[in-house]
Length: 289
Ligand code: GRG
Image 1 (cartoon, rainbow, N blue to C red):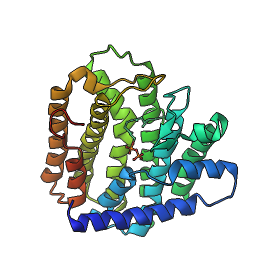
Image 2 (tube, rainbow, N blue to C red):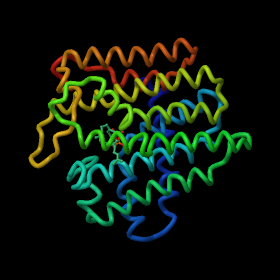
Image 3 (cartoon, rainbow, N blue to C red):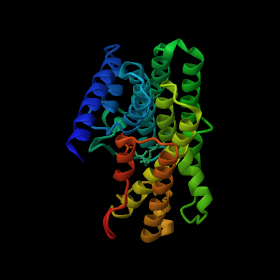
């Protein structure tokens, strides 16, 4: 990564951490303690960084975008807390330390996840409307709700839970990944630009970019799973890379990242940051995660 980008990400991450910490300091209670544990620390902040990059590319100020970026990160972190629960993925570790329910118990982790999800919409409700355009703000909030909700991530998670590992149906995998993972990534890419008042053609391009970036993100994760030992007792998740095999997975990754790149190019969106995210997902050499 070049020095300018490194500085850019350092600056944005530090702004995000401060803003997240601010929202998570609203009260001193055990529920907030569990929420803070789940969010603060070591997340990559990929989705909020994406929202900031797309918004700032089209001229929106950081102060306008930050609450929306934090709301997306809250939704993402809620999904991780609930995903780790024994009744879903039964994961003991998250981000290199005990998962929220391992640290606080199942009941409090469940409630901390609920708290993060509801608070995301509290943050959105209190967020400034761009140029006082409350309709636009409502649209962005509704799109985030849909990406997270029962037609989006929740539906994807249910597909995931019910997926048979023997399934070879590629379209079904794509449907699952679009809803479970790519939806929130896509809405992050689109929301920033919407809040900045970007033209419709750019929004459409970012929808395509976000979808393929999100699909590539999930496939890269699946590919990395192929290189990791499956720990005992862990739920065996649907994994597209396992179905396609390593070589074909790499081809899919290239194709999807290529589509995302082309969408940006065709719309004339020349953003080092948005392009950097694609490069980050570029498949490594054969035999490596
Ligand atoms: C429980 C409703 C509900 C949904 C959960 C996204 C999700 C749906 C579960 C996560 C399962 C998983 C490990 C998917 C792989 C891709 C992914 C979303 C990884 C985690 O996101 P990162 O890498 O995490 O952005 P950090 O820790 O950096 O925030």
